[in-house]
Structure formats: C-alpha cells, structure tokens
Image 1 (spheres, rainbow, N blue to C red):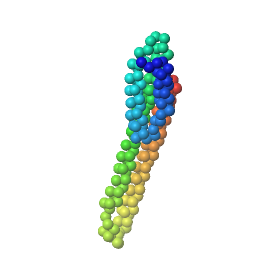
Image 2 (cartoon, rainbow, N blue to C red):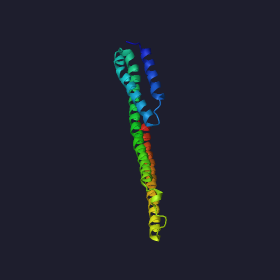
Image 3 (cartoon, helix red, strand yellow):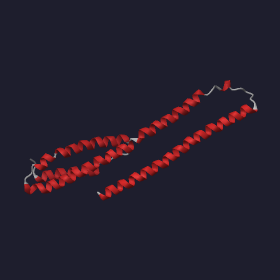
Image 4 (cartoon, rainbow, N blue to C red):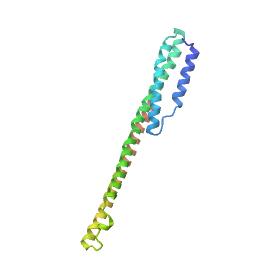
Length: 172
C-alpha cells in the first residue's frame, strides 16, 4: 500500500495530465487522443483498490480527491467521444469531394473528340449547344448552391451543439 502523500501526488499528476492533454482538431488526432484517454481512464479506475485500502483517518481526503479525478477522467472521455462523432463527418465530406471530382473527370473523359463535331452547324444545332452549355452551368451552380446551404446548416448545427455543450459544462 502506498502512503497517503504518494497517493495524493499520483492523483495530482493524473489531474494535470487530464487537464493539459490535447483533444485534437481532426479525426486522426481525436481518435488517437480518445484511445489514450480510455487507457488513462482504465488506469484511474484500477487505482481505486489502492484508494480503498486506506484506513479511516487517511481515507476521506484521498477518496474525495480520487472521486474528483474519476469525474474529470469520465468527462474527458465523454468529450472525446463527442469529438469523435463530430470529426467522423470528415469521411462524408471527403467522400463527397471525391465523388464531385470523379463526376467532373468522367464527364470530361466521355465527351466526344473535337473531330467528331461538325464544322458547319445549323442555327438549331447552335441553339441546342448553347442551351446545353447553359444547362451544365445551371446544374453545377445548383450543386454549389446546395453546398452553400449545407455550409449554412453546418454552421447552425455547430452553433446549436456548442451552445448546449457550453451550458452543460458550465452547469456541471
């Protein structure tokens, strides 16, 4: 059994790690921090045996500080799990970007060779070509508009979550 001062030092050191460790700003770093935090939380949980082994005069102070550390550790884990859900959107955004690029490349590759286009065309052909050009522009603009709406929705969702997250953090 460790003495009281050793135990309190360990708790203080763990609190320092829990309060200064980063959270990450992208999916890879958040997942790495979450993995590390889960290991850290397991270590904190396993230390409970040591804390409970103290006799009555030492137990109260150590137990109180240990419970605070448990709370801190659980909250950090919960926060990182939330961050993992947020950064999980990276995959969807990445997939959409890839799909847009593939579609544009595929459309360019499938166009007929310039030599297949008649040199002299009728007014009807010119009008049809112009309408097709405008249709392509309009539809790409529509996709851009949809992405702009998605960006606004992302901002509103982000603000909504951040507000309620801050309320929870301040009231707990």
